[in-house]
Image (cartoon, rainbow, N blue to C red; front, side, top):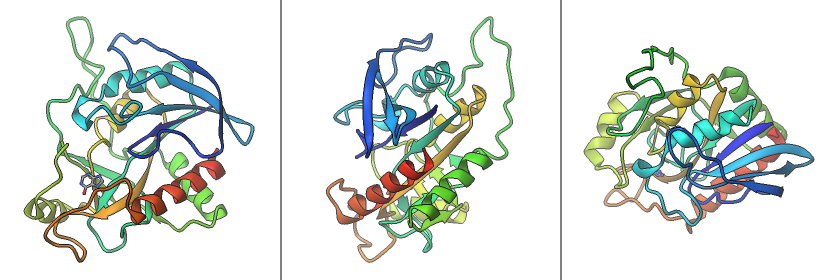
Length: 243
Ligand code: HPA
């Protein structure tokens, strides 16, 4: 069974027939919302809305440890994390979907590991390749079969939010090698690795990052925008083909 984490704008999955909702509690507190179990094209899927229902949790308020723990407890074969991003490099304009292959963590103050506390041994988890290669390949293949042009690879910069970035911050991220910027990729990816669950990201590009594109004086991060709708439609097609 595959797990899907829905980001902003993705509170229900296209083609998803839900069969059951389950409240899960974890040693790290409560997940963003109950898990929804169901089928896509006859294949089992478990879904969680990262921000809760109705977008109530800001990126830094999300209990990433509880979310990943709850999904891992279901014995899922992998986690596909949908998270909208702003495009920094020319290859990822608004309306496209990226499948990043690297991430840089600029967040702070988030509970970001399971390996802490008095009786817990320290474990230094390898994160050289933060995304699972096979799951990434599956998403890219799914995009191909669905006729969606997904961008293969790229560096996701994860900022703290909930505010958007300054133009200078985006220029710095660009110098760091980032291609896209979002707020929820970390510590989610690292926690999935700590739990040993294959994890990959589908990143709908919903705006140009600050100072990029034509509108250099402001960023429109609007779930009603055309780019948002176009990217999410592609995400839906990829998910249906991937499952
Ligand atoms: N910055 C950070 N996170 C985002 C953006 C952005 O421009 N767009 C969507 N998520």
